[in-house]
Image (cartoon, rainbow, N blue to C red; front, side, top):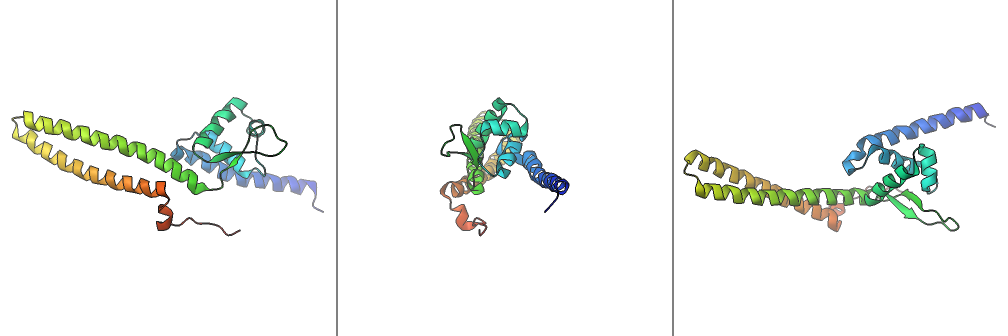
Length: 186
């Protein structure tokens, strides 16, 4: 029979190991446009043996229930957690999304689609401005610079068309035919 003091020591080591992962998640969660505190919440829910209520999260993280609610909403929007139901429990329960690829794909699609569309619109507007200036200016040097800029914008357009195709691979799930998901055998 193990004694109580070694149990406490081992429990502390377990918590230290978990905290190592949680802290790294919190540091890098900004890539999902999520705050570090939501990243710590994600890690807490990830290591929980059972789905958690907002009250449990609040108690575990020693933060307000309002803060937990805000953070859980961010995680829900990123498809990193999901709301679940258990018989006999009236409060909302949350657990981490089992499919990490889904949350990455959704965030990737949202962020890159928005950025790509904004940049493509900026290219079109810039081209219109340059073409208009080219028709108005009498200066050969300005015309040469406009021609160079228009060529550069063609390269940018090609890049954003390619990026649109990459986003489409994620939207359709075809990306996983090219780079298969790594599924751990259970």
